[in-house]
Length: 229
Image (cartoon, rainbow, N blue to C red; front, side, top):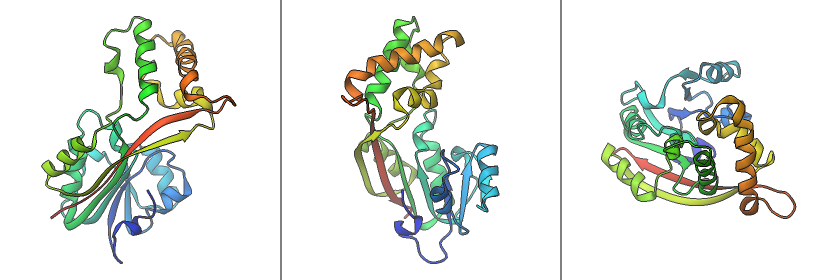
């Protein structure tokens, strides 16, 4: 998302930043700096951040405990994992901010990894899993949906954009699935999971792999900025 200072912060600004894998990325952690507080619900990630001198605390984005303490809340690639209650982190950010504070973030938007998701769900169905779509772990909102949620929490949206972002996969599709498809694989017995991911990879090859064997994920990002009036 870039340097938090570029999002309208002023000298002395205090901000909260949702951490997210790769949590050991030097640039990502460096953006938190001394004026910020990095939060994550994983003790291991927070320990790694603290080891690097980052001010960080174990905390769930759904249950921020701050009241009118910060000038900005930043989030990158976290909010689409909070499918069970997408309004909770928005409400928490609103509570944490002072008047005039900004909530700036980026998450997966409507249509993100659409082909990959369809292939995962269809392959689960072929393997006898009923209501396979219920295993989708992500929440990918439309512009209209997220703008409404921001307004309902009390924010004034300044910008909400949906940005297609085809993303090369250096590890190939199978490597991506090994990292992100565990919620789908959990629907199957352990002995079937490798074959399941191989089948999904083969299904996606005609649409996401080029003639040179290079894979691209069909990402779409929703980027937003909102102010607490």
